[in-house]
Image (tube, rainbow, N blue to C red):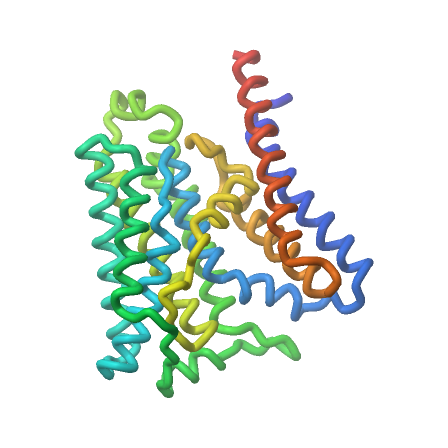
Length: 321
């Protein structure tokens, strides 16, 4: 097997699975082949997509972040509380949330690097900390009643008879930016080198410390953006937002072909993983007879299959060397 084809095989496999799922569903359910269903794949999974984008870069670097769901939940209730109870303008509330999210991510990245602590443990502590802060702010959902929020929630770009909501546009723009950062910048290449072999990257003179701090900062900003998108989707804030989001994001990234130990992957694979996740949910909605838990079962099977596929590719590469 050619090296280039071997590296791209996980992404090609993910793309093929998505195509097979979508075509099969289109043949089984009337109306599945429609622009509305395609747009809903992005609209309904915008928060997950933004989170998975940031998680992809973290996993590129051989890290992990379990705090993203809590960051989204804290952002959701923080913004809603500022707008409704303190009468802060939504733009200022969003900027404050992004600032807090960025500082939080940078702090975790700094601790992970300078104190040589496992990312799993530091981000787990971050998850408990922010989830507790979210429920400390408010234990119940808070509706957002603001003219700007209502206009943004209702805004859609119309192309003929197709309406593309703002949430879907935000996700599409975010994924494009994430793809550029991951594959067309020195920062993205540094992350892949760091995930491939940290000691080698250090000997090459790459800025390991700043790369770790910035990647966790960026990932936390993505999770904050996911929380903001969630408030637009529901026009409310909820401290329970994002529970389990970190696990869904990791599953999407791995199904997309990114190696969990770092050093190999592609943002396009994450997009395909997200589309597979959304397609499975759409199939369950169209069918109406299957339990929602089937989506978890299918995702679990796909996740296990891709872990085994990646392991097999690593062994093949090792024998080739």
